[in-house]
Amino acid sequence: MKAGIVGLPNVGKSTLFNCLSNAKAQSANFPFCTIEPNIGVVNVPDSRIEKLEELVKPERVQMATVDIVDIAGLVKGASKGEGLGNQFLGNIRECNAIIHVLRCFDNDNIVHVDGNVNPIRDKETIDIELQLKDLENVEKRLEKVNRAAKTGNKEAQTEKALLDRIRETLLQAKSARTVTPQNNDEEVLMESFQLITAKPVLYVCNVDENSAVNGNAYVDQIRELVKDEDAEVIILSVGAEADITELESYEERQVFLEDMGLTEPGASVLIRAAYKLLKQQTYFTAGVKEVRAWTINVGSTAPQAAGVIHTDFEKGFIRAEVIAYEDFVHYRSEAKCKEAGKFKVEGKEYIVKDGDVMHFRFNV
Image (tube, rainbow, N blue to C red; front, top):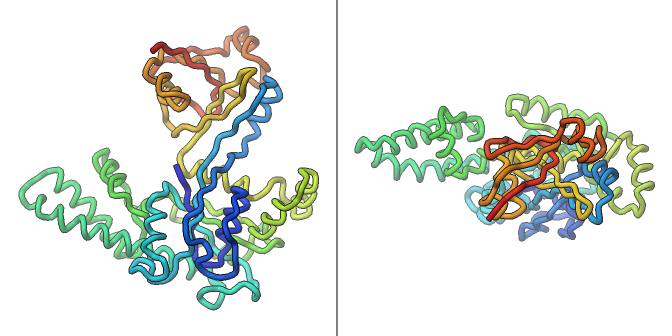
């Protein structure tokens, strides 16, 4: 599962990517400095794993990760191939969610591709290009499905009805994610269309250092604009985040954050938000060899969770032994949880909860 960082040129995408992944994507003050998409595998900050490490004292610890893709800046006309449009749109299509970076700071030394700072216009530029590309794809599909629908084919008629609704929405300059599937068949179809504007989105307002805590007028404009989108807005001073990553020690970084009025780096908030945006959650395995966070889709069953460790665990699943994270921390060990009756045995139908500490029994 991958989240792609998008935005106009020079809004701070590559600098943000470097902060998140410590990968060395080129960051320069001109458009198209990131030609190929850069992919970073980023640890998901989670205080729970630190607590489990403290209790279990394992030989090693492994955190959950999320893939972040740095995609070069889109420009007006990208849907028609302007700039490096087609390539970029293809890279976005391969991602499961979108992190949309908006420039919400003034700085005469950093060129804006459209001449002045206006995050509402910038958002609309990106939205329109993505909507136009989706509209092109929807109309191509409609050409094919219309013929089959006229013959009375029920599946084709269902697909046509959904495509017509999506087309009408896109023509109103709204994204496909605002179209709600009416039933399971439409949900499956919607997924199969792979529309860019159907992907969940998170807005990152890149602000100056003084606005990192409370935002500014630009951020207020964006919040008002997206209030009906069911999308999260995060405030981040990407320049300050870059400075924080340059500091050698944890203590220095904490002092820097305190001076800014922050309790943790904004990058940590963003990574957790991206993880949630991708509908991911975590369960833990905790033993003396290793304490590890495993990533699963929200709603996964116990066998599906076991399959993330190894396919044999899912094929030969017998049962899952489960302790809620809060119980593990309260009683401080597996043995004490058993004594307190907090050790549960679950079968194939069990839906894994975020934070479950699990052990699987299987037979192949």
